[in-house]
Length: 251
Image (cartoon, rainbow, N blue to C red; front, side):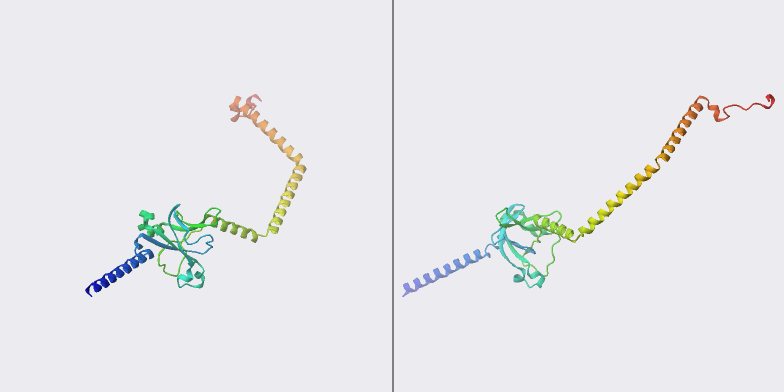
């Protein structure tokens, strides 16, 4: 009996230790055992994230530092209003050893301009998330909920910004009354043409007058040159007449 009791005790202890080991392994795989080795962050997008999926790379200045863990609607994760419920919720996981010195500075980097951008990967149709500290970072969109993880505000990609600018330009062109603008230009050209013709007609009609005026100016200029030459030869002319008047005694 003592031998059987000892066997049961050994078996029971083995089972308990096995269950504990399995539980510890599951907890570690689930994240509790390595929680200090991961940094979770989230961002929210107002536009399409087509091509992005769970497992997509998350890069910091081109270097992979993590991956996408979950994509959902904000309304399914937080209690929000109707305007925010359609935003796209993206959960990212970073390995702290990949982040290195940035692991403990993530919040400070966000304050300095760290932004998340969904970027297409070439012509494959797949997308990734690029993180970078922007010199001129867009103002973070306002949110009405408290994020459970570090919040990295989104930033539009270069292609999206170009597309938005092109759309604005096209909308402005569509709003322009091109027919009225062309009509105004045509009227202005005709007015300039009439003014030019009138000026040419006036010049032709007054050509003789202009010729006489030019001739008089030339004669006056010649007289001034002669006077200057005479004064240069005989400066005393400035004080007396050219021909001295006879004295009274000689008359």
